[in-house]
Amino acid sequence: MDRANELEGACREQGLRMTGQRLTILSVLSRADDHPDAAELHRRAAAIDPGISMATVYRTVKLLQDKGILARHAFADGPARYESAAQAHHDHLIDIESGRVIEFHSPEIERLQEEIARNLGFRIVSHRLEIYAKPIKGRKRP
Amino acid sequence: MDRANELEGACREQGLRMTGQRLTILSVLSRADDHPDAAELHRRAAAIDPGISMATVYRTVKLLQDKGILARHAFADGPARYESAAQAHHDHLIDIESGRVIEFHSPEIERLQEEIARNLGFRIVSHRLEIYAKPIKGRKRP
DNA sequence: GTACCTGCAAATTGTTTGCAATTAA
DNA sequence: TTAATTGCAAACAATTTGCAGGTAC
Image 1 (cartoon, chains in turn orange, green, brown, yellow):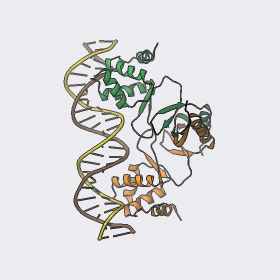
Image 2 (image 1 turned 30 degrees about the vertical axis):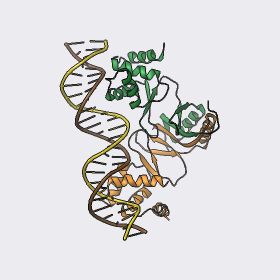
Image 3 (image 1 turned 30 degrees about the horizontal axis):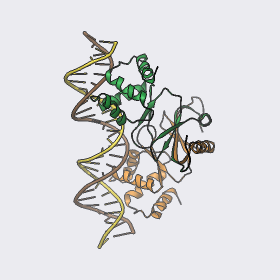
Image 4 (image 1 turned 90 degrees about the horizontal axis):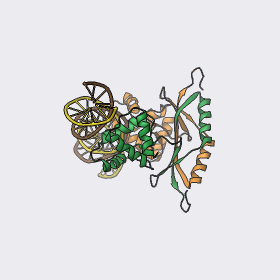
C-alpha cells in the first residue's frame, strides 16, 4: 500500500530480481520527497546497508529508468537527480540559492509547445523545461 | 561589419587580449551557423591553426561565456554546444534523428513562465526549454 | 616589463564497465 | 542450477587546472 511496495511491485512486475541492495535503494527512493543525486542516494542507502556500492546505485537507477520506474533529471549543473516516475508529468523550477526543486505543470505551455513543434514539422518525443530562479524576499511561498 | 569583427569587437571592448588562438576561435565561431561542441570547435580551429589545444578551446569558450559573448547549451546528451550570444533570446528544438538544432521563440510561453514563477514566489534568473522531436515524414519543414 | 595566455599533462567529476565471486529464483 | 547481480577497481568522457614557458600590450 505504501510507496515502497508500489515501487517494489513495479519492479516485480518487470521481472527484476529483488536483491537486498535493490530493496534498500527502493526504500530510500520511496521515502525521498526531494530530488536526490546518485551520491545522496548512496549515502542514504549506505546508512541502511553499509556494504552497498556506488556502482550498484548507478546500475540500479539506470535499470529503473529503463523500466520507466524512475525519472532522471540532468539540471544545469551538478550531477543528475532522480525522482519516482509514478507521478504525473511536470516541469521543474530550481531555487538557485538552495538547490531545492519545485514541481509545476502548465497545460497551456504544453499546448504551445505542441503547436510550435507541429508548425516546424516535428512530433515531440520529450521536452525539458526548467526555470532557474531566486526566491522573492518578503514573499511567502506555498 | 561581418560577424568576425563583431565578435572580435566585443572581445576588445571587454579588454581581452587578442591572441592568435583567440582570433582563430572567434573566426570559427563567427562563421558557424550551427551549434558546435568543443571538440568540433577544436577540429575547425585546428584546421586553421594546427597548434591550437583543446585546453585553449575550453578556456576560451568559458571566457566568452563569462563575458556574455557566447552561449553554452548542455542538451540532454553529449557534450555542451555553443552559439553566439549576440542573437535574441530563443529556445531549442532538437531533431533527435539528426542532432540538428532549430531555434524558436514564444513570447506566450515566456509570459506563462513568468507568471508561474511569480505565483510560486520566485524571480526567474534563467530558464531552459528544449523540445526533443522527430520530423514528421512527408511534411516539408521550413 | 609584466600580467595574461598557451600547451602539455595530470587531475577532477560524474558515470560506466570488466571481472571474479555471490545469489535470487 | 544458472543467469542475473554485486563490489572492486579500472576505464571513461567531458572538462578543468598547475606549471613552465611564451606573448600582447
